[in-house]
Length: 194
Image 1 (cartoon, rainbow, N blue to C red):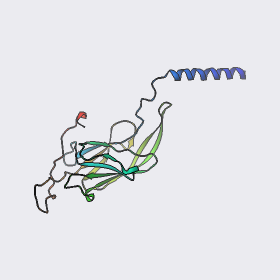
Image 2 (image 1 turned 90 degrees about the horizontal axis):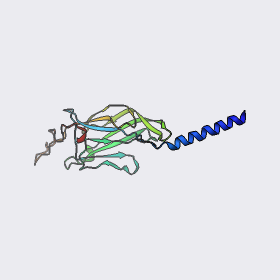
Image 3 (image 1 turned 180 degrees about the vertical axis):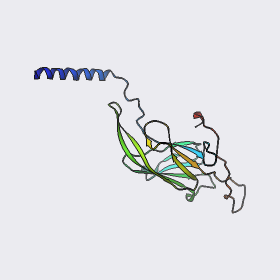
Image 4 (image 1 turned 120 degrees about the horizontal axis):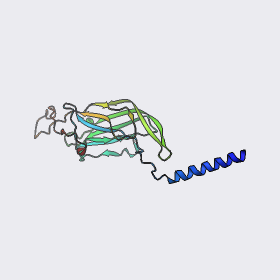
């Protein structure tokens, strides 16, 4: 009886190996859970494109720049690290009249890393549960969490609302930056324009 069970187990293992080797699909899932942040005008609620914004990680390896100034962006992916519970992003405004560290905004996201077994082919994928979000308010007006559980689905997780940037004045006096006028807002919501 024991010999028969052993032969059945060996046969079942061989059939499983053959069926697995015939599976050519592999891991087709997106293996990265990275929150997408969309930018909006705080006064109009419309999508906002900024071309003087630089986004870089604080305390990240090499403090690498995610978005460089001069690139028009209306959204950005803000990666998290599974070995940490807090990630911080610096939003620096590189337009000549705003390019001062005193104007920079910091977005801090506190989260828990949740390992998720996707499949044999994909293995473990980390998901993140956002528990707290804080920010400075130089030009970031507010941040809304569209979905607090960040998965490998490519969708909007954060809505960042920016205050209107001051109009660039031709010569003005000391009060040149006091009046705020929308100069970077564009009313486009079509996916092809992002």
